[in-house]
Amino acid sequence: MKMIRAILRPDRIEKVVDSLSDAGYVALTKMDVIGRGKQKGIQLDNIYYDELPKAMLMIVTPKEKTDDVIDIINEEAYTGNFGDGKIFISPVEEAYTVRTRTKGL
Image 1 (cartoon, one colour):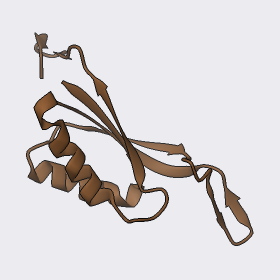
Image 2: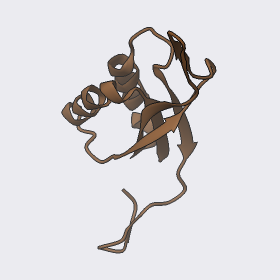
Image 3: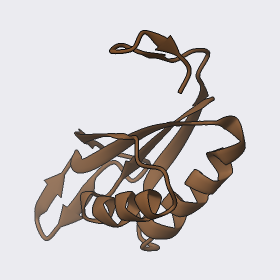
């Protein structure tokens, strides 16, 4: 299993989530976060914004479906501008469902 963490523009999240759902990936966690990337914020007129609002999606998926999820996120979150986001992939050793106490997805 793999954990996919995607930090994206908040205005692109609904489109990403809808496309993931249409493709059969319905289990995810969404959080509103604040941060900055390589551009270190943004300047609009005389105002400098050091940290920007973003949204983070966390998705656990079987290893063989990771590339499909990444492709969907990249396609739907893309604007071609700075701040489109970042995707991080990590291994997941185990998962448990609390209600049923079962192991696995």
